[in-house]
Image 1 (cartoon, rainbow, N blue to C red):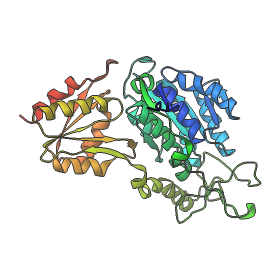
Image 2 (image 1 turned 60 degrees about the vertical axis):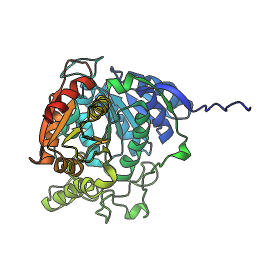
Image 3 (image 1 turned 45 degrees about the vertical axis):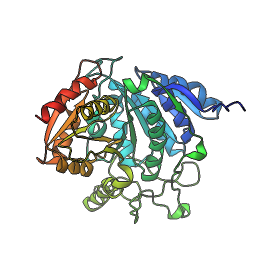
Length: 383
């Protein structure tokens, strides 16, 4: 009997290692960052791997500079990423806003830990859910993807590079300490197995190029610095040329286009996992590593004869409001476990608009929520 051929793409990895590996596969060629627990292994891995393939790794003096560096490298044509946690993510917010307004593609990994302030550097929380959406000021588009496992970290890291390049919207990969440090068996995909989007470069000569042109798609073509296309990039409100303007008509036109991208392409961006059970009067809504415990609690409830439906957003922002509303129309109660005091539960309440009761199961002491802490809430809801 012939020996079974070993698949050399099967590995045991942590989520942080998988994130670095997947980013390289997706085409990452520039990383700037600053060490911070529990994300440091991403930078450590890329510090040796990127130079080996002709990419660039740079440790900046702080998280503010790291975010600025990847914006500059993206304008120069590179696929870029940075990684951080907690206080570092807070420091990045001003430059994340700059990337939003200037529509510069970039991926920001945030391996969430406990907060506020220095908080719990080595322990998990889902503390940055709202900061991922509204951490920078003003009305702005943002996309946040939220993996539950090491294998899904690979999938969503690769996927993060496509919407940021396609829609010119910064993408946050919102991991947590549990996902970042857990080790699991995974299979690394080959590049030709993946759907990878490259940015849309200008189809007009430099003299006719407008960096923020109002287009039918709402997504302007993006020129690369150093290729003969000269354009102005500013954090001030600007017109189609990129130069600052105080013209209220131009300001409103550009701001509406900027934010319209999320609504227009919402169905291409939002992904959820659903496991609906016929006749269920209870639903569980969970995300990230907490979804693993929630799934087990759902199975435990079903083993007891309780019909329970399950909904998990892989895309946390834009929020899966339609899918959540549909769940609220099918059940009487939605249980929302999360390692914070209810940040996403407020979005669930808004989406269901009174169609179902929303019950929070929260934990903020640095320990994960277990299935046995979610199950009682399910059982109570059916009594």
